[in-house]
Length: 274
Image (cartoon, rainbow, N blue to C red; front, top):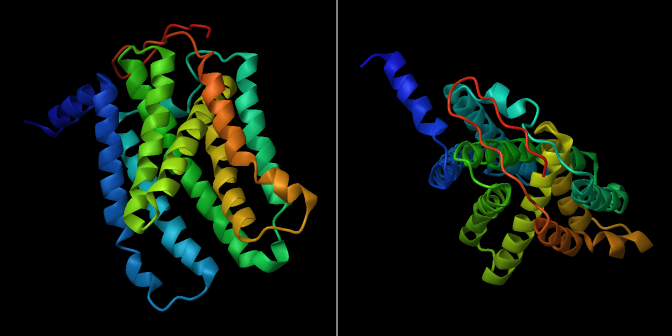
């Protein structure tokens, strides 16, 4: 069997799409990411600078995860497809998801005590956030959505599966000592947040926008939670997670339509309003 035959079979396998291939990809990514994270563990020995811990312990491993995903996209020939225009148009109501997430990200950034946090910590989290947004959105709103659409699922199924697999990625926090209750609440939040990011993908028409929106979410949460400013807005900013949960779950009701992507290297699609 030639190298060309192997490549063709690999691409045909993924072009068929489906929920179980989506799950397979997410599990494979998670295992590779965890294995890759071990490469950076020795660099943390003796490090007591909080900013450096964030950079080495969070930013570098997730950056490696992003490279793994780029390599997968190159192997399947999907990179242009993922970052090109969306095959279906969004509706105006979908901007609600973008507005709610963006509003609370701005509020959290506005209520961080930057003097206490320090420039190093802020920069470390902004860099980590960019890597997190890229890797997690390319995986779940990029590859998973693409796989689900190739199998012809209705859009509500695509949205739910991509959000559910995004949430499952965070269940591994149990292994790091996080309590079951905290993990359960995180799963509810990440599922709803995933729905909001799917709607952001739909209404903006390009994967780059949920990547950037996600990239501002994690830094704003961690910085504002760890270094809250003494401000009347701080309490309002703290309502961000409940607001996202309600928004995501309510807007899920209104997702309609279907988009079917035919298999093949030159993917086209039927345009369906939803």
